[in-house]
Image (cartoon, rainbow, N blue to C red; front, top):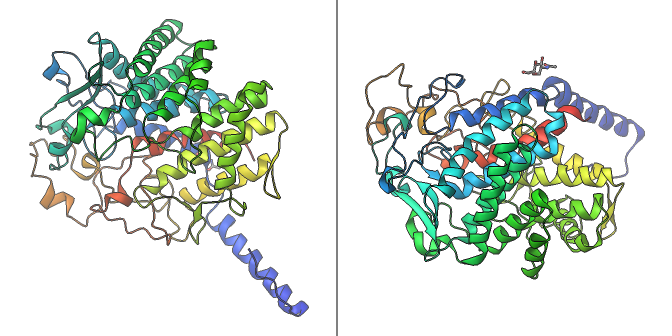
Length: 493
Ligand SMILES: *[C@@H]1O[C@H](CO)[C@@H](O)[C@H](O)[C@H]1NC(C)=O
């Protein structure tokens, strides 16, 4: 905001000229972001994270098939799915959240995606094929991950060379996991909506499995970290507890089925937290926005409580709102937490554009204290975040790999930082990757197109340092949440 002070007309004029000049620099020198281009790349990224047998039409060609015996430790087939980030572990908790967000993107923004909608469906299916195996392979069990993270993290090797122990983790009635089960149910239910028309049989299977997994989450309540300990913590501990996943799972099942059972379930959970964050861990805000759709679009009074909570969330986020609890960097980036901050930016941006859409469709506005909030208020806040990620920032670099002229070159990602099997067929063992590659200051040999990294620090600075995983590591859930907003801005002015 400009600082107002008494001044002569002449200096006013030069100030305006200066302001115009900076606007020119921002808009013309760096150009309007090409949201369509960013959208294509944000989806392509998922191919680089694929585990299992890769298909012929694989377009990220420096990757090849990997982890083809996953599940063998439990005598089941658990091949497929995604590596969560720069390592070679399949963590179902964030993978399911990724799937839910990709599905929500397709449901809410699919009409704006053109040919990209099919690519999003393929990306979703890569995860749901795996999640279905996890839910249906062994009666009474839900598999929740493959690969010992503590062993994996000690190595710097390509997924194709992986020789670490591929432990299989599960939850059951005796060792419950309402967090991971609730999220898995949410993912399967959301995906069932995506495939409803294009593949009704698959959609039915997804929904049937979602109901079963949700039933398990509700009936046997508990945190998966209580039994899995160091296999999931501190990596993907459910720090926020499992009530948010029960709410989120019930909300998605309600959306997919309209079954009153799920309405009763979400009501039975009692008072909800109203946090100022949204992530793979904490889903309250996502559930509140999802449920507010009924209050706004269907004018259903029994959902007003959730709409109120969605508004409270927006008031904690919007800059200048009297109840804002959200920090912004000098360059304008939402800043929530030091580790992989952009994950919060993309997830919250998704809620901003989605709630703006609901408001616009129902001609709704609300207030944060005395500040009037219109759909445009949310849209401007969201657009600023997307534009920042795509290069309108003090570093003048895009935080999406392969987008724009300047982007992170040394991302914390095993496959990207090591030579491909084609260029270096010899095996690179557990320790083999550290000296020549991990600690090297050279750019990564393989470009993981579309990957969004953890991002800059709270002073807008980014060091592009491979060893600094808090800032230079990509993750599936950072990308999944930006797919919707990119589709939105590619078709909205
Ligand atoms: C934006 O990117 C798309 C897809 O990469 C490309 O086809 C299009 O020409 C680009 N648009 C502009 C204005 O550069």
